[in-house]
Image (cartoon, chains in turn cyan, yellow):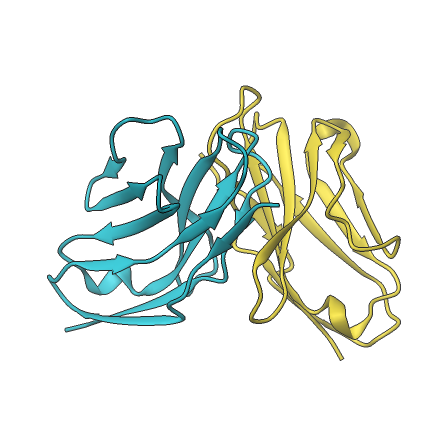
Length: 114
Length: 113
């Protein structure tokens, strides 16, 4: 069975600093995708970044990068140069069927302080 | 381009009543999904439509939940009768026919008292 674990219920970071949000996963399937979503106070789930299990390089999207360590089954999200607007819930998710039927973690609440 | 729209944003009902949630996906998105987050727990998959057909409804908790997508456009999720444990946030998401990243709505916060 697929499982996503996010062990940090809350994280604090100062503006302009980098922060790493942890995510570990469990699966026996060799083919899978890993995702990060951001949920601001408005409630909408915003797609941030995707990493395929066969991708050779770590995914990057602007200030977001995914530190993919396949052997350790971890897919940590790194946010560089944090901004106040980064304060939100962050969910790690996995899928075995392309982008469909995601399995989510419990989320990490990030608070960025001035 | 309009995003995924969900209505209502909040719903408070009493146990035993019926509630219908609505989702309008992004135009042209054949794939439509319902997810649910119960307080403090993971967001869980409920079901997946491709156009008007149910592709996968393995996540539907029980037969009190009925999802429809007549005409392959908007979708409704009806809970009848609602129970206390149905409280949570119900998310709808859509994606293009050729699949791709999911675009989520803002969710409906359902409170069953």
